[in-house]
Amino acid sequence: MAITIESQNGVGHDRLYPARMRIVSYLSPGFPASLFETLAALLDAELTLISDMSGPPPGEDPFADGTFDLGWICSTSFVDLSLRSQEPSVKLTGVGWTPLDPDISGDPVYFGDLVVPARSTAQSLHDLGGAVIGCNDPVSLSGHYALRFALHDLGVEADTFAQLRFTGGHHQSLDLLLEGRLDAAVVDSVVLSARRRDPAVVDSLRTIQRLGPWPVQPLVARSSLPDSQVLAVRTALLDANRLPAVQTELANAMLASLVPTGPDHYGRVRHAMQSLEV
Image (cartoon, rainbow, N blue to C red; front, side):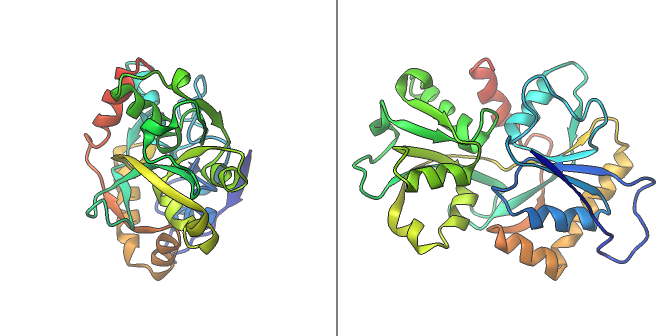
């Protein structure tokens, strides 16, 4: 499902770009919609939120056809789009974020957290053979591929090891786990951190293993967007860390700051996907 929000210029300056850009986020409601609304307003961009996938599904490419100029997508989607042709439809803007997580040392990485009910006897991934495991969606890294990568490293075929059930979102996976309809779930560690503000989640669920860390979700640009425009976007977003409204939105999403990322930051994801022959 997609909703379109016409953002307003939130920083009191003339428009940075010759035409209003179109930005899409595939990361809400896992991350608060208000975070992307605030960042879109900063860029004076038109925002679309797509809530049922972590990135363009196989066979779709809204960057190649010019539907969107920028997009917050899962890194597995970025790699998939990069591998589809000799002339990929997307390029990195060089912007990521660092989660509020003591296990990452301030790096732009996160985990797929394996979560079970507090009463479960499972202590690690090895104990989940035959279990019903909730996954976000087919293109999600932390909510799907992280599990496949971990099982591949163990020499195990995911679809014979356990029953993977796609729930449509990290929050849905956690809700179904709380309702007793799943044996376990693999979820975005940042989303889980936000949900742990609820004492009921703390008391009812526990993390048995962290899969990763993996590079955080990138902001990509369509390949035909001029490099000067991409640089302007990167500069505006990185400078936005000092704005109180942005600081508030980042903290609410359990993020520390927007940070630069290098061109090789997603090489590990590319290698892992190629190892699975995706």
